[in-house]
Image: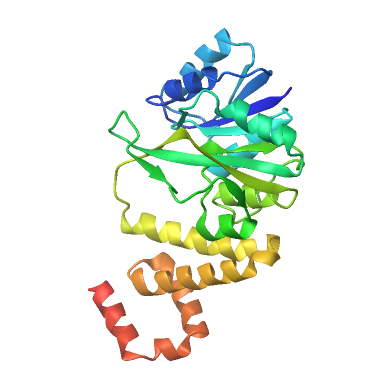
Length: 289
C-alpha cells in the first residue's frame, strides 16, 4: 500500500461528506486506503462514513464504542495506517487541490531524507462556503527546521503527508495537542519541506470561549510545554519561554477561576519580586472584581 489517508471525525455531519469527496477527487497513480476514526459521534457522521465504506473497498471505518477523545482517536487511526506514507485530513477540513497528494508523494519518493511534507492552508469560516484568507501566508517553498515549526506551529494537520517509518505512535500523558508532538517526532527521523501551494481549506468554527474554557486551554498548554521538555530537549529554549508565558497568563488573567490557584502559587514561588509588587495585586483585584 503506497499511502494511507488518516481521517478523524466527531459530530461533523455537516462537513464530513465534503472531506471524503475531496479525498476521492485526488488524481493519483498509486493505490491508497482511507482510515476513518469516528469517535462515537452522536449525530449522523458515522452513518455517512458507512455509506462511503460500502461504496469504496479502500475505505475502512472504525466506530468507537465510547468517546476516546481527540488524542486517543489520533493514536488509534495512526496505528491502523498501513501505507508507506500517511496523508492527514481532519473531518471538518477538505482538500482543494486534486494534485496535492501526487505532488507530495512524488517529492518524498525522490527525496529519501525528507519525512514530512506540508503546504499553505486557506481559512474557511464556519458560515462561509469559500476560503477567505491564507493561514501562514509567510510560508515559503523550502526546508523548515524543527525549531521553526515548533516556535510558530506553522504546520496545519490537513496539509501533511509523512513517511510512515517512525514506528507505532503513542502520545504520552499531558500531550493534549497531538499535532505538534507528532510533527516534531517525525522530524527526529528526517527533514521537512513546505510546498508553495494552497491545498486545503481549514474550517474555523464560530463562538467565543467562556472563561472556564479559556483557563482549561491555558493549563493544557502549560502542561504540554512541561511534557515537551522531556521529549525534545534540543528545543528547550522555546519550551521554557512558552512555559513562562502561559504560567504568567494563568496567574494574571484567571485568578477568579479555582483551577488556576495551584498555578498562581507556583508563579508566586518562581517570581516573588513580581508578586510583592503593587502592580500585581492591582491586577488581581481588578480581575476578581
